[in-house]
Length: 249
Image 1: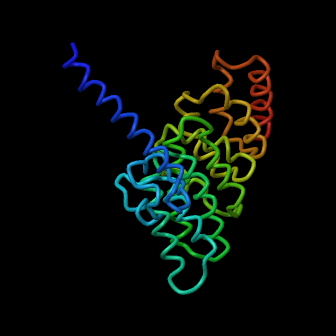
Image 2: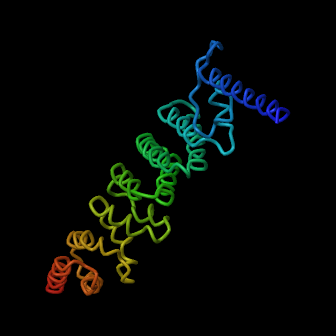
Image 3: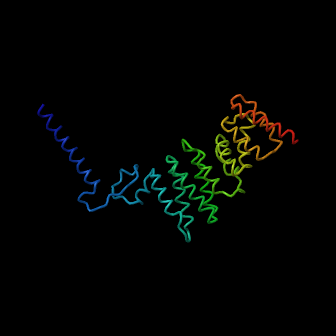
């Protein structure tokens, strides 16, 4: 028993000593150095690691990439756009497990691309915003709304958002009803024609159809009104509007 206690006691003392030394190191005690605040996935680096060392990690911290890109957003001068785009591509590649970075940087990049007339920056912003829709687990329409707030009303919303997988088209379409009605209708049309539209979207579709007032829409609206999973009030309003369209013909 005594022979066993000796090594065990040494092991316990060794662990305690290591924990004490590590605590002092993290607190910066006696080192004369200010503790660096690093992203959670950079913990294997020394506390004094530079931002450049953090950015060199594979997989790199999405937050470090995000901060690096934001620091370049307002830069000017020769090559500044290209350097900002490189930083954005880093977030697009490494930020997919942190979709919030995709949304926020996409909004910033879109603003820069529009105000400075940088087509490549604008295209990269759209890539970031579309990636957010696919990668996030909630509020998928936030990036569509961010685009709608900044993009000119004349922009082709269908060309931008039809690059998403088709299962996201109706979500994008409903979000775009107030700002880009024609593009919204084109995005909603496939689900309307197949009868697979989410019943929650029936009300916005009716609002959009009222804006359009196209007699050719009567057929899909009639089919929508025939579905059993819609609220009675929505069905009644759809039928009334279909009758109105048919009188116009």
